Image (cartoon, rainbow, N blue to C red; front, top):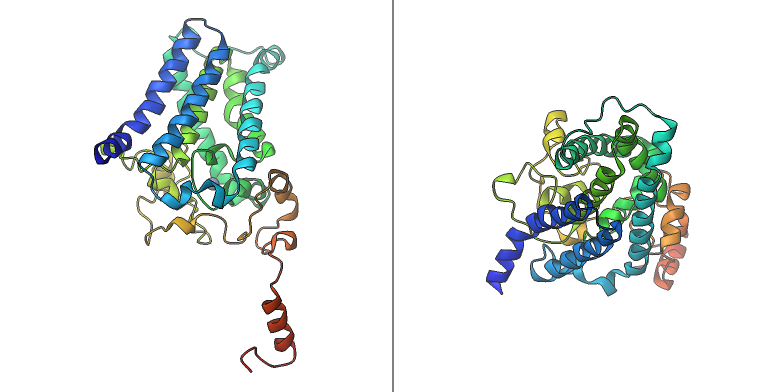
Length: 317
Ligand SMILES: [Zn+2]
């Protein structure tokens, strides 16, 4: 088991980022039906869940029944993937509306265009992510991603659909307007999905010399802690380079991170239902504490204690 665990720790990220992305690229470049990307996405999720069982950071994050959020997370995944596909299908329409294609190097080989598109998208996502933590309006939407009390394979795509649309419009629309082809956009969308899975999965990844240069693994745990604003760092999607440039990179947490340190401190009763999570940005006011509708109903003992407190007594008396 220990050899298998070591293998998974080392091979997980390369298999996902290079192996599966390579397969997606092969499907597109050889002109096969785009339908074949769907089973590759399914393999990505299945690999993440298998690897989480073999080499988890925290076994507690794998207790799906205890967390009770599986149904909401499946909804998020389906909505995220359909929205991403819709974005790609809209590309011909957008390019018809903005027929300016003078910048995009469409004469490059497809892999070169893909690398360029990923580097630009990685930077754009980092900037939007930074803004999502600094601007209260965006934070309300982004809090849906942060509210979950654990990290695992599905977490990356747990996003409010409005926030996902903002991500796509700011992160990818400029590429589309420059003339990025539908083929490149399709593989780019695939890589972004796989990156989000790898970034959030509960797999104790060993990154070797790339440790500290990628925004995946333990570095991203610090971004998700529920310690006030201490997680306002490590905003990168895949590379940590931009965080280093902007001074927001923290390689190590100020104290050890425990399995129950994930979430938003203001939202200790973050809702488990998909529909309540969609509603959250409209009832949650950053800085005003937890919305009343998410607070746990008081127990009989708490009600009695409050009653005694109201009479200047304490429960002990
Ligand atoms: Zn964030």
